[in-house]
Amino acid sequence: GPEQAVDVSVANGRGKGLRLDTHSFELVEHPTGLSTEDFYEAQDKVRTAYYAEMRELLMRETGAAFVKVLHHQVRCAERANGNPMTDIASTVQPYAQGVHCDSSAFSAQATVKHMLKSANVDPKFGKGRFLYVNTWRNISESPIESYPLAMCDESSLVSPEDYIASDFAVGEMKIVQYKLDCTNSSRHRWYYFPGMSKDEVVLFKQWDSNPDVPGRMCFHTAFRDPTSAPDARPRESIECRALCFFPDFTPDTMAHLVPDDDGSLLCEGESQEVRRGVSAVTRAVQDFSYWPAVGVLWAKAMAGDEGKLRSVAETLVQDTQGYLGTAGLSDEVKKRIVELVMEKGEFAERVKRGTAQYSYSRLLLGPGYQKLWQSKAAWAAAAFAAGYALRAWAPRRS
Image (cartoon, rainbow, N blue to C red; front, side):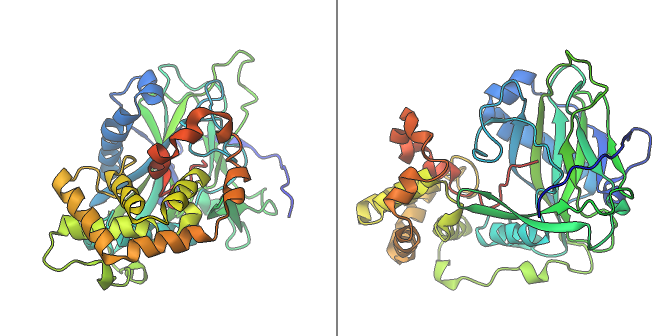
């Protein structure tokens, strides 16, 4: 049905004892070594140094044995270069207003299963418990003055009627999220942390496989603070999404997520790096519905020629966005992965079959692609298509 606005009170959460497992969010301190401009201009540094900081933070706060940081999103209304509804791949987004939870049990479990199947996560972490979580930080040297983040205490919700499953779609990509029913809004308890400094981080859950904690997912939204001054500084923030794994947790809440053995992708006598690489590259072309139009166009143009198909495999194995787990492999190992991928034939068949359902007119004239053709970026499709190829687990709306 249509969305409905309701008035709610958003309380100061400082000093209230709000905890991640009880209320679904928590404020912690964890300084960063990055400058404000680093978050805008040094994306490689964000993916290396800042991701390492977030892994350290999450392991410390949750006790996780392993943390996989999936991606990040910087937000600032003044410096935004993308639309959260149509261009989720932009480096700087405006604020996401509207109560939502970025994921759901279905999407979170699908993400973990995909990560395990594509060898992005070691199979030894495919048991116990997993936590899909966001880390949210002010990146300015000044405290936040406008559009702070509000979070709903999940222990105040009424289950199951408060949870409305909703598809979040950008082009061909769809993620099952939850929206919040307003019928019981008078019971809901909302909090924010005013004046957040750069050294503070809010942790909030997207999904927790542990059924025994009251805080398993967190509805949230940016909101216009009526107490903000008319000349308040625009908010500057970064959020990261990450998966935390607890293999020793009992009972095992992940047994149904262990992927079936894909024997056709395992290469006897090859190293584990090669086997995982072959699996990851082949699975990258399993479902093109998660690729952006420019990537599908590129792959479709390559599908009819074996030499060109090899270039698709070679581009994917470079793993410029770090989604396949092959970026750090040696050139020799990458070359071997490509050789095996091409020998097995399954890769070529998947590319041909997967792109056949997309017509050139649909790709060139469809939503989200018209803007691209207004710039020279269209002529560089092959260079950056693979960088955005695997966004199945990367919904960036929060």
